[in-house]
Image (cartoon, rainbow, N blue to C red):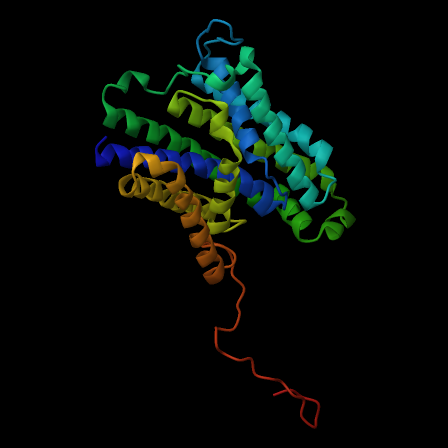
Length: 327
């Protein structure tokens, strides 16, 4: 693949991660819901769309052969329902218990995908998923740029919709619940009702991202939705700036660039026998970058960073004078 085609492939993957991160930003950055089960909701969307749109296969449920757009809508609906059910059952828990519960949901989803072979294909996954502009596959450049255009439009629509929601009265209620739950409740707002809504909408966006990724790749399997996916998305949000949709997009592109770049570098510097051990360098690279950014920008690249004294500069001690005033 030439450099232009790879550039389109890279941006397409980065924008799909941006879509997932936007969903997490709604849940955590706007509402304060600690979701560590991101991979599970992405998997729900991917498998739902694949079952709705993939042609019939022997020994597997599905084969409805519906249009791709129907599969994407179905992925959003099913992922939103799953997120809402999870929210109703768990959002009364505190943040640490909520994190453990959502992680358990992701593990359950992966185990179902691995063992429910009649639905998901088991460890072999689902192949021959229809791809947008599949007729252009013989021309890689046109195929990659066509997919990039589709993913870019979907990500832009999701971004604009989330920006509108964040500025709406609904979004202001979510921010109020995040900042001061008691004050919001005293004004007659139901904390549980709004949080379930936010969790469901965020889950729907993650499900859409999973569906888009499934049709972009053309194949899905349980190994695609391991906990490292959740780790990647959380790092993207932290680096870009929690609470900022722009930060979610910028962080996704930056972290994916480092992840892909470090992977390409290890493939050049190490032999095939050393690849498994060298792959850990990707996580090391992401960890070092995360530490540096948190030291320089504690709230992320585009987050609001509170003012603080510079390193090495001592704070002036304020001592009241005889009149009681401070200098």
